[in-house]
Image (tube, rainbow, N blue to C red):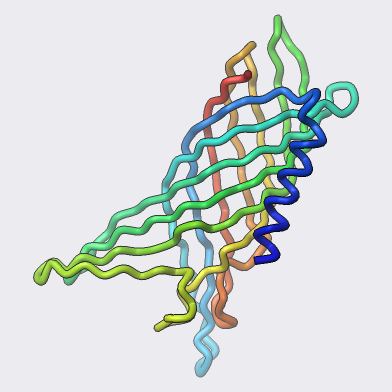
Length: 214
């Protein structure tokens, strides 16, 4: 709980510091989350590697706070939603994931043409998992059950359970043409997403979107 409060306190402090001179923008786009994990079987000491890929979408807002010259500090908040369907012989399964992400980027804006800029940005991002679950529907029985990956108190297999709080580093570029822009980037997770000592893994995300400058 302390980590969650710290996340919101950081965002609030940065917004307050830059409100007077900040330029705002809203944005949305496509994001793909690749969860790269390794599971070590305790008895035989064998390591199993796995990649869980989930496509999704994101939306949010940013403030760019001018620092010096063409340098600035970008803070904001994004909501990212991921979903994927698959099935086995016995059931259909739907994964859903919803995250709140707070970016803190340093950026360098290079003007070109008339009222256009090319910007390079990078820095840490702080994430809070809101939903991470799988819904199972039996193909024969039609019964529906749900697996909550944050519900460690009722865990049946601890290797699947996730940490709610995570942090990462992001790098990307943005092209602004007056009041409109496009951007792309890559996020590399630095924290372990799993609660189990036998399972380790991090998220690696790519994103591509458009922004409207206010």
